[in-house]
Image 1 (cartoon, each protein chain N blue to C red):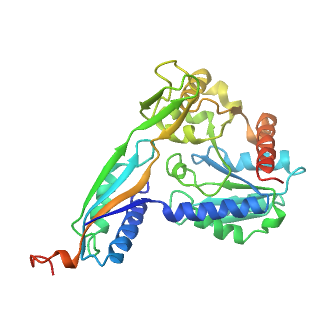
Image 2 (cartoon, chains in turn yellow, green):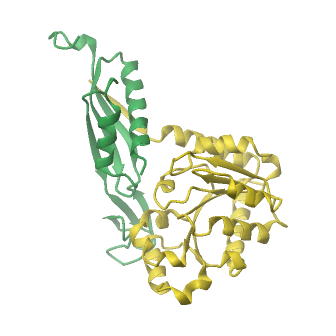
Image 3 (cartoon, chains in turn orange, red):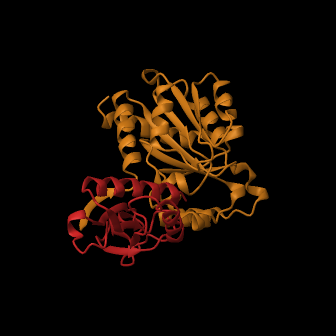
Length: 222
Length: 124
């Protein structure tokens, strides 16, 4: 006998993601899911974003890593609440992990929650965490050919940060080709050249993020 | 990517649905997978073979229907299929296209054996 199911395979993940999003909207929290390879500069970008926006928004961070709490400690050292999730080998975060991490934060005291996903250009792409925007970082040393190899993440991101831009002179990175391929995958996505560790090029990114946060506040009527 | 997790999701949902019908076994599980997800068929089959023994789905066939990417051009309204790498409208070459299909990841249906059906005596 045939039984029709028509059920999402990530049913459980999608259910928790929807609950997370409802909780975030209820408290007026804007949530960013930050995706990149290991070493692209996710934590540095978070620190630069904190420096740029901490006067305007109350920020908290969820750090996803396979092991260790090094990243959460780095964030906490700047006086920003941070929770570390150790996935213990899993290559991406899922929405129920976020829910548990949020329980450890004072959600009423947060305007902007940044989730640093596990360093990986493949798996995190398919998992909704309940965020409002997925943003990806590519660093110059990784090469301009990455959108050919990992198209999905470029197609899904709402913004692309091109980090370590100051290293451009020493790498064979074709920025025009990079921008062209990204545009073919995701016509309207903005690309922000940035050097997070030295604070260069933060303005364009932080202006975009501010506009996105404010637009979300209007959308949920706050 | 995480085919083991996907297959375990498929199995949980299928076995639950089969148990609700008091099924004695699952013959076939049909799933739909969009071309724009990060799923590999071989890895799905490998995980399926590894995880099904001892469940109601032991010996079942996993049928994977691949759904091609399809977008609609925001400028000329053309609807077209495409692969993973280039979402440009073939008619007007615009990049402004909205994806409408290709990210599916769902269990479509299962085929089960019911105790009442088995009057041939083949199934216990």
